[in-house]
Image: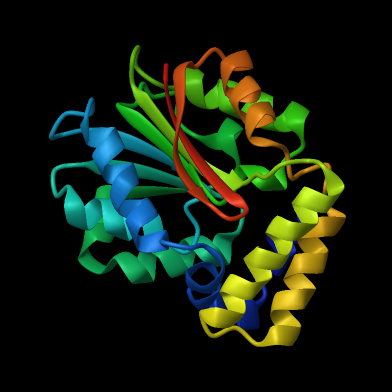
Length: 228
């Protein structure tokens, strides 16, 4: 995890951060929009929302723009990425309490909803389960949790097919072929972190979330909504 935090503290990586998710995550803006819709099914107009992995501020900005009455706690281990998020949010940053750290550093809540996008795939199954449990513990009963991250079938030939599509999408979206291949190789090398959709559902259930449902699937990415 330290290496990942260091990568997101590199000035060059931060300067070009927004280009990456847009090129590698199909329908990213719609993922943010769907996240807001799923939260709003249960969260009140004055909801307080926990956002884990909030660095960069893309989902925070989308949620803040869509729901002007919501306030947020944004948690991230990379200070430079939190600074980027604050700049991106502009005046809406007044509605966000930024926390430099991990889930254990987040306030106890209780929160009306929680979000963790493009983040949990950095954690192995054990730490992912613990983190999900800590998120659930901070939610009001019945509050929604929306998560989306890398997940695809585990059979080697099938996994490689989806990883190739992941890279091909990035190239079609404007990424340099050499960089797309680099990230395909990096993702393939971390197969212990790239769990199957079934394993991810089991993790949320082990963390005592209920009614786990997949709402998003895009090549190597999956998204779920679940309830405390």
